[in-house]
Image (cartoon, rainbow, N blue to C red; front, side, top):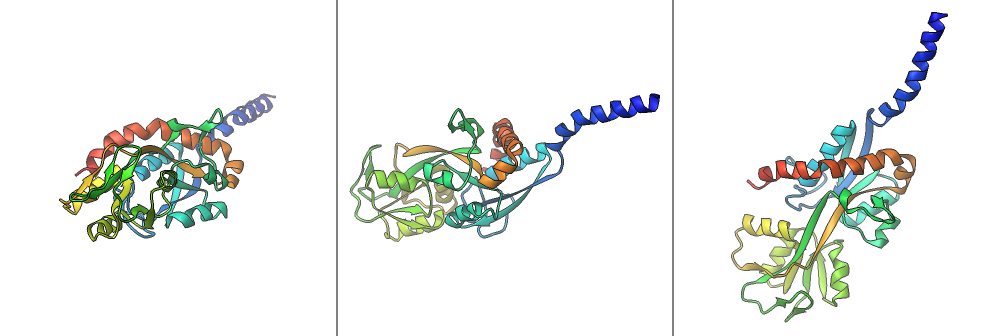
Length: 261
């Protein structure tokens, strides 16, 4: 009789305990991110994860570790990334800002019908840059005195802003490429993530490139899960976004100094 009671109590206890362990048990997620360098958020070119990888990967890796999740990373050019998630070749992609048309490809962290900014991986500003002797100017509403196009990274969400402002542009791959075009007078101005372009200006010791103020806009950037993955793993997806929000600021505060050396 005692054995039966003990066995029943054990099974009853396990029925409550196992669901809690199921979200913390070994779980693997395949995440893909762009193959171009965008310091300090992601380093390295090509399909290899760099060492150090970049702040966005640091945040994601910390969240995954605390949840007991293993992340398998891959890298692709920006535009093919969206087709890889649409075809369910990967479980998720990062870090991308929200555009309504991107909802076709995957699921963003949401709250009350809106994208939940608290569960972002990062926030980044965009700025215009020009050569010192150029007459190009920006007043926050209009970019004036353009002779040639504005250079911009291929597939970046800021392209929508350029279209709305009727600013002619041409796409390239990588910030070094953009700065090279600017220096060789192949574009009149470039636009990019402020912190990344500033990094390359300092790294390449470019004395003739200046930043235009004010900044153009600020975007939040997220991990996006595929529709299939989210449908099958809703609790894991939500916990992952929650954990990103929980660890993000501490990771950035701790790691930013390492990436600033």
